[in-house]
Image: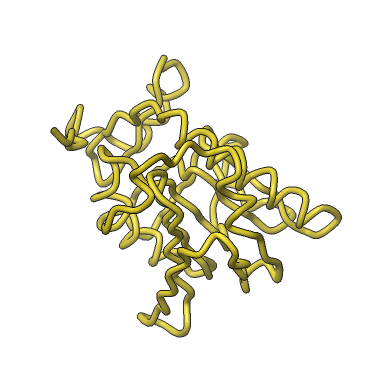
Length: 200
């Protein structure tokens, strides 16, 4: 049975959310007064986040970018939302929310590793909100069950190009960062099993 991520608290102000999140024992995301608990990731989920972070950090070494992972909070003023993307890349100096040193803004690259409990939001509400970020150029949705990366590239206002990468011999190009990575490197330590042959 698939668990649907449901609001934990409604009608919370952004200020109240930030105050609560500082002392919370688990992470929450926030959208227009609703609070959502962020579920723990599976072994494959965590391995893909780690692998992508390492690959990007090595590829971007010495360049004017910072790579952030799951515990970094993102503020999207256009939709009044706070999220914890699995992986983000920001330009240097990192744009911060005014008055905060723990909330970033204006990423150019975001990646989410899909999970049964979060996939609908990653594809739906969150992607809608991410598209409102004027600086965002690239969004990846990464399957943890089989080799598959869905890449969305901004072409123009309201226009995104989808490319699907499924061949482990392919090299995934990341135009927003002017680099690339091999799918075989991304999935090197991921236990795929028989599920890699399933049709989505």
